[in-house]
Image 1 (cartoon, rainbow, N blue to C red):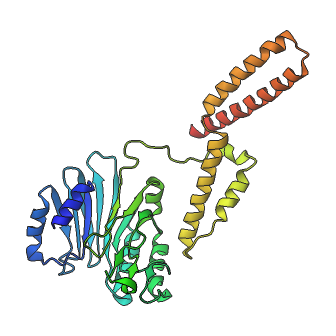
Image 2: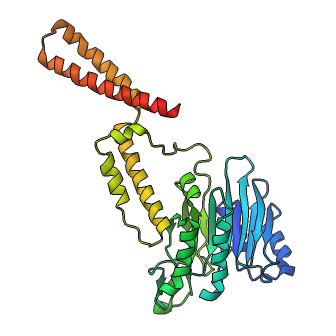
Image 3: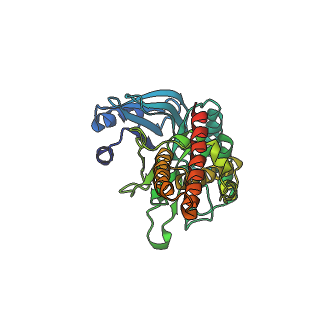
Length: 337
């Protein structure tokens, strides 16, 4: 518990899920007191005598409300007391065989039907998702991954961006006897991904544990941050619009799940359109004012020599560009209204 207490303090954690604690229920309160009285707790001893899932939070900062407990999951809502952040959160612990994990996949899939807001699922799934998720040991088979893949597809969940170590667990073996796997993950629904676009999960060094702790900062946009993406109708008239959409929609997706394919393609299209908007439409009001100034400066030599063809050409080009951007500005105002 000393290591956990130090980890929570050094990483400024406000909400934590502890999995497979191996603490008997009668001893749980002693452990929690050692961590500190600033933390409140939810555990699943009623569903699992081994209390495999604990959730704790700093009650001065965060409000947590229990939604549902099972042997594999604790579902709750998490919200900051300042009202700037809220999500549905599920802490998950998967059992050690394909058959014993199937009730967990059903639980996650069924819970999805009740969620109408951003939903984050994190934990030790004890299951690989991709063929590259293990080094040494037995090769990963489709039988190991298909339930996880199907659960994510049917629940509309996709993995969050991550940094740090790729593999989250090892058997601590020496040399070629060391087996490493990626069995701990953070996944979320489309509402989460669209609201917290810059969230990154950090896979930290495991220390004395055989698992890497996963740490994610949820305060990325709490202070304002960048504007959310909005598609303006005038972009559809851009000469490169269809090419950008086609390029984004043609990106390949490493997994076969139809929901993730759609999500990946839409994300690629959005990124392409953001880049196009930044290149040709950013700071629209400033561009218009600049063009008005340019046009005024052109009229001075034109008044002195009205027949100068070069100045006439400059006037025509500047005037047409100004009219184009005024039309774009009017279209944007109409859409906002």
